[in-house]
Image (cartoon, rainbow, N blue to C red; front, side, top):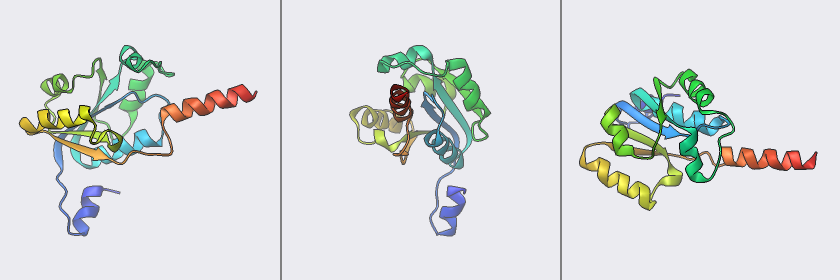
Length: 155
């Protein structure tokens, strides 16, 4: 379903952006990842997706199950993604300087956090919108990892 077309039918005009950007680890690729990428592509002509490097993932005191080179290939293969790029740091302004996107997409679990309130101010000053999408609550890579650990412990 195309959100913009669906909204237009209901009399709501949704802006379609030229270049969109989103980021993630995309480890243990799941429906939440797919939902984010699909919704983002519905709202922009060209979607760039930053895939966190293995080194960057370690900032969360975690380790990706799927190696970076495989994760970026998976993301690049998704039909909604026009370009998958490595994300080596969390500096979103540096990413904007490189890719010149006019919108950034992120899960709504980040909405109203200090970090993203600051990003909103920074990006608002240069005319970049931040669009929050509903977080897929029933699944996450963390939840999948926890489930796998429990299942393995039962063996």
